[in-house]
Length: 198
Image (cartoon, rainbow, N blue to C red; front, side, top):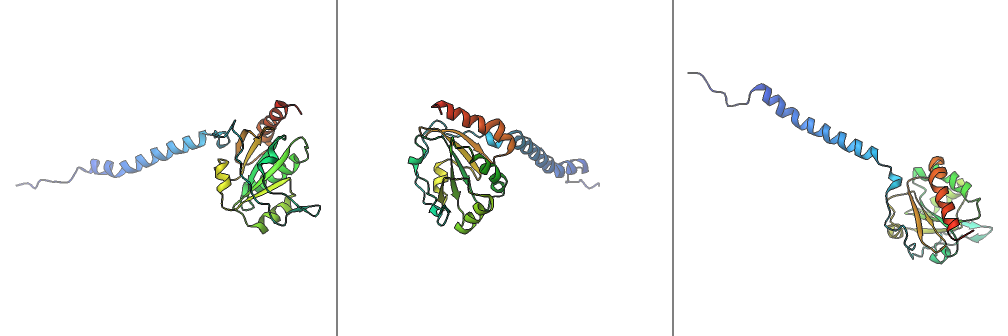
């Protein structure tokens, strides 16, 4: 009598062992192409066209200009001025990269720069601004991240253009770069400046 084998043929066993690996590679490729195909700066914001959050934030203690404390964030500061609101932190590597561009932008007095310091230590935040120069006329401290949630922030850095009526007109996710500054952010700022006449 011959013994009957109850195990699967060798080819089938090999295929069953390789099948999870094939599935994993397929999913990995799918995620790779999906993640690589999107531009994170184009993530839409539900706040576009809506008033900027009415969130008051305390100032960054000890941050001064001409021996005067730089004010925190007051929603009234947006009325009548085009504003560039930048959410940043000293621990954020891309924030270091964009800091010189913000310092350069601050030279244009047609609009104001407002900073929201996100979940940062005050000493580190002051050191960061001391290193690159403080481009902001207002710096609000968002110690627990709650205000940034109201602004719809996904992560730092993010930058918003707020029109003269206090309405958010544009949102840039990720760092300001020379490329997106020239092709996206400055045109959005110009559009906001022209909307109510400069």
